[in-house]
Length: 463
Image (cartoon, rainbow, N blue to C red):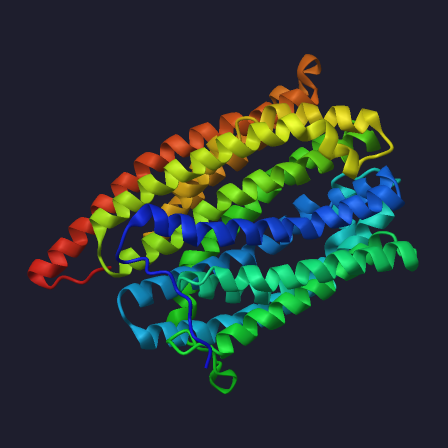
């Protein structure tokens, strides 16, 4: 059996451990982003800006459909972390063997939804006519292979909850190389346009899913997967859904606000604006993914320590994660903004107008992006405590509802009907949501600590 390479989250110095744990997650996220970046770059270089717009205009809609099920993978990770922290091996075993069947069922549902709804929903978003057929084709192929993506995310959540972040990184490195090679073959040699990049992404995700499943099969601890013993355990599924479903709903509602904003971008009726917005969003994704790695770190570090009832250590973890995400955002955001004129030419070599719109977006989003990182880490910290409904409500109100109201009120004023007006809503929503969630984290942690103290003194139940 394969020797595990877990990081000890319960003991030892925090900051070095957090950094070692987080760096592979950052690199894994960047590799996942490179899948889409390779898609955009290849079609941009060999097919033109219309194809770039076709691929980039699907992102918000794809996330809307997928995020509910991705959220359940977060729940699986938190359940594993709590079980490992409390040394409840049977609970961990049941969670792992429930998670994989849940992933397969989720993938089957998503395939049907994605293939069936892709074109009608793209039409509802007012996707420009010149990109609509290619966008619909890209989405249908993507969703035919979505099960591989879901399985990879469930398995990776389990490994990371156990302290292994290097494994998922290595598997994505292999898949990333395959994705780039297949992009070039399908687009240049076979002239498949966006269908080629979608097929390349699907095949590479299948490889990464196979590798991460193999890693679970070869483990020697409570997270080891035994295929013949897979079944749905009711209590574990219920807990995964209780923690993960609010996270998934939050992600989907978050995506609804992004779909509405994408529709507002589409309303300008310019393929150049759509392409520029998509290219800028892809570059910004490298900042977001790097910061979001600290979200995952907060979830799993705090999750294990919550299971072990180490409340003083939880407070230190939270402070360390906020510090780290601020440093990442304040370095990466301005750096990519400065390099934007050169980077955007890889995505959009045939349109200076699209590049100009991309830079406008990055001014309002990329530079202050660290505030989004603070918000995400606080959300992850709350989930690590086992509180998922509260951050969902706060995020829905502070991000989703606020942006939707903004689009249908302020943005409708003729003088403010501009991309700049849309983008400033991001900064406002991040700031408000972070402040509210920061105070909620302190409140929830105090409540959990009081319950644990009462249980220790009087034997009261911990729930």
